Length: 259
Length: 362
Image (tube, rainbow over all chains, first blue to last red; front, side, top):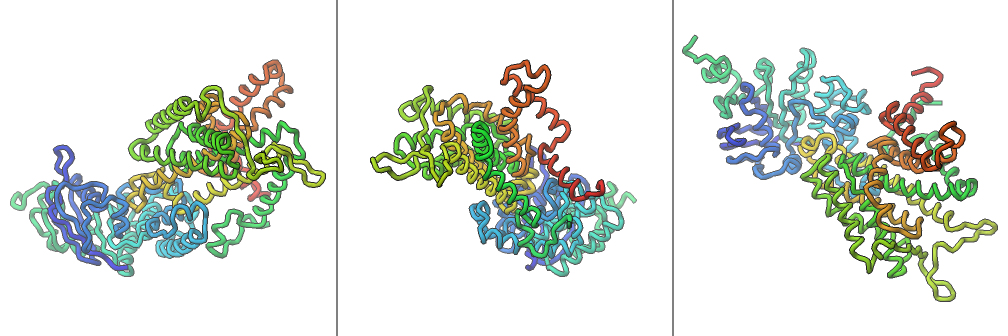
């Protein structure tokens, strides 16, 4: 499993007059950790929704390695190895942690529907084989004690971890993390940072990260892109971006000269 | 006695009856079920036949509504299709029941697969209304094909076993079987057939629940957008749920027709029947096969039970048997759902927890 290169060219998305994205260009190198930051309403989550196929941009090209993403429905995008963590946790609340994570492997199951319904040997084998992989992720994220717990009743911090786990179960080549530390306390944020670094290190997955915690971003990211009003106003290393006057203006509302 | 089995492999974790206590329970229930027609009166054998029919239908609706979250008021339409398919195949072609029943399921499933795509654009109450429309449409079509269905006058349902007797007449299922001193009449024979079919339906439902396809249905039920981002094809899951559900409903309709021996269109295949099936799965506990089976058994057995028991209760004894059963039924359902919103499933979980923790309280 290796990371994939993501290339976005001139992405434009509008909702009846509201121009959410106005020609975003972004290239994420394979295996790198790209952060996307920007004020609220800048279009960060809309950009993620375009990549994962939930929104269809009116203009622009999206490629994952050599594959064109622009016309793919979400379940096909998932099949290409695009995994995602949502901003406001979206777990299947009535299902157990184990079932949630097995769902991450849904597109990798080899058994067809009639084999499932008749519980043939192929269905049983697939179930065991994928359970083994899920257990590896459970082990990695220290979720052993929650296996059988319905996801809806878990504490918030654990739910975030389950969501990361579910995304990892998909064997992603591109991992989209939408504010993975939102609502977490200091300790949980540090744990999450450690997990993200480990994912990158051990699996070599390309990671795109939306985050408001700038300290977190500056520590983790290889490169940072700043979105404002649907445009990428700066792209570069964390140090370059932090020194960019346009970024300072977007964040503070003050031009570089206003002092 | 250990409270939980020691699981040492993933294969073991997938078993339906995981430890010897569960297997002992299975053996016990099997013995009770096999002995049933020999120890109870004819009326209770008939009740059991209706209950087993309801089990098959309720498991079908549970897959659609409980697992995939698609509310359907059209379940009676699939039952009607199954019932009329087997009746017509019996009358026109003298087809044996073991061929007619899968055909009944297949016809219902074909219609279910055709309706399924409507569920892709509609949800909740809107889908309920569309499926209600399907019910009216089905009944209208059945009424307007009198050369096949005999319209309002109804159709006799002949149950053939296949093969012919010495006189060249096709063998009827209603002919009694003699096994030594034991004689199995029509109702008893039906009972054993239906028992096997109900067990098969429950097994099928359980397979859906524990497999990848069923998990995808539940994912679509809980969060369909997130499900699609995970690689679940929501349309496929919904259509599969409609297909499997209506197949089982068709088989249940066929069972009902064979049991009744003469069927009309309305009643029984009206909105009331669809609502009864929804009541069964809610009563049992939505989202599990246990709920479908327990709900169907309780629902069908309540009426005769209350007719009997009602005579011993003051004031209630003055009512007619029909009023008695209606009144008691309403009371039981209201109290059960108020006390235990999860239905019989909730009651069962409580009992299990109590025994697992015994002698401590928790």
